[in-house]
Image (tube, rainbow, N blue to C red; front, side, top):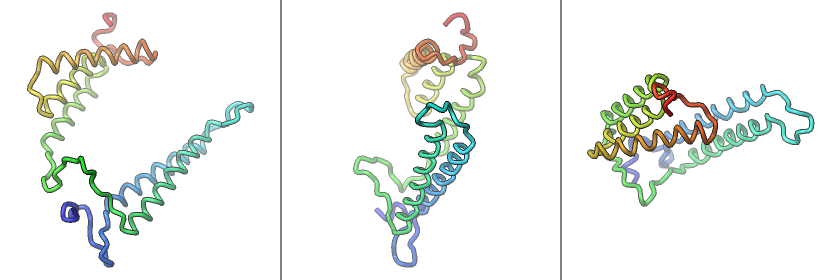
Length: 175
């Protein structure tokens, strides 16, 4: 197992394996925790009769993130390395498939650029179909049917069910 993670882990001077990616995750947790704490400090008091003020959750969540960052840093320093689960089927000896990642990124960029014009129902269907095709699906008609159903159901679920206005785009007045 240790030979599979040699790209991401280095031997320390004491012979323990140190997973350097865990330090990156700990730093990310610390930055997010500090940002949440700073943001919570800027919140104003709510009504005087509220037992829990709005900033309370920000302080709790920010503090927990900072605490988790410290605990992860200590665990990593002590040599704790995450092990793959028994059911994982990822071959760590193979490189990343950057072509697939680029294609998925392109699908996402098209969605971002066209959502206000085309609307969520159409773009949501495209997102499903595009992602399915990039990841290897060869059943285009079924993908279009499922994508259309998901796009319409999520649009109605958010817009009508939850009252959250999402763009209808060219279908405004039809939906």
